[in-house]
Length: 161
Image (cartoon, rainbow, N blue to C red; front, side):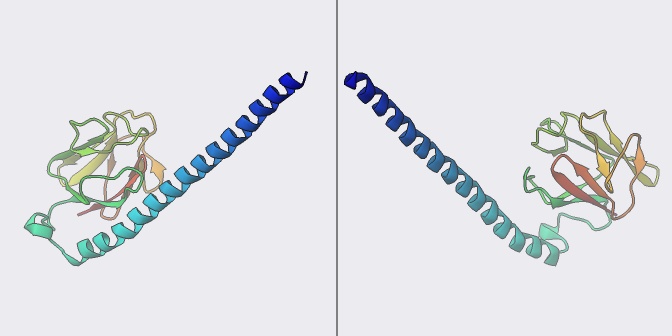
C-alpha cells in the first residue's frame, strides 16, 4: 500500500506544479499582449499629430479629392492613413480590394464606395456583419456627406470631401 500512495502523491504534486506553470505562462502572455497594445497606442499618437500638421504628406494627397481617413484601426492595422476615392473604392478582406481590412468580421468583398454624378454612394455588398454609417447599419446604397463615419469590422473611417 505505501507504494501506491507514494505514486499517487507524486502525480498530485506534479499536477500542482503543472498548474502553477500554466498559470504563470498565462499571466506572461496577458502582460506581453498588454505591453504590445500600450506601446502601439503610444507610438500611434505622434504619427497622428505629425499627419495632422502636414496637410499634404509627400505632395500625394490632394485636398480637392474625396477620401477616407482612418480614425481607428488598432485591432486591424491598415497600410495607409488616408485612402483617396477616385471613381470607386472597394473595401474588404480580399487582397484584390482597394482598401484591404484583415479582420475576420470583414467579408471578402464587404462594401463599395462609388461616384454617382456629384455624390458618392456607400453600398454594403451583402456582407455577413454589415456596414455601419454614423452608427446605423445600412441596407441600401446611401449618399455620403462630409464627416460621415463608416465602421467596417474593427476599423472606423471618416469620409472627407
